[in-house]
Length: 174
Ligand code: TYC
Image (tube, rainbow, N blue to C red):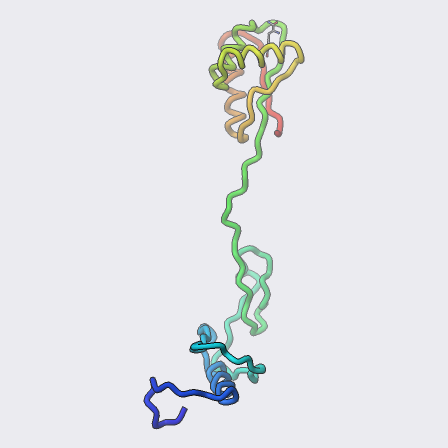
């Protein structure tokens, strides 16, 4: 830009002049500056600028800087690294079936009471599940994340033990 112009004077550049100014700006930019040309209309496209002559060192990234450990590029060779994102969505917990096992001694009414109390079934659902277990040997009481399923198994068996019934439950990955 001519030295006698006010800094905010609008000057119209030919494509070749703009190319020269653009390369000049790019060459003197510091590494952490993002270059945004003052777009006021369609910008003509130009060829590549000659390699910039930075005064200071370029930012580098070593392999250990990668948040996701995937190795985003750069590798400390003077190139600017590729930005990577870390997964923020939590993983869905694995689900587990709580299975009730048949035996010959636990009274049917007790099993129905257990299904109502610990699995929030109504009388009809509880009766149906109890009869299924009685006839088939095993039945599903519900499906839960691991810790909840484990807690229910323990609650049911503790309650059965307190009442001197051999009723057993177990877990199975859903
Ligand atoms: N089979 C038992 C009986 O005849 C009833 C029963 C049903 C026991 C389901 C356990 O999980 C069970 N009294």
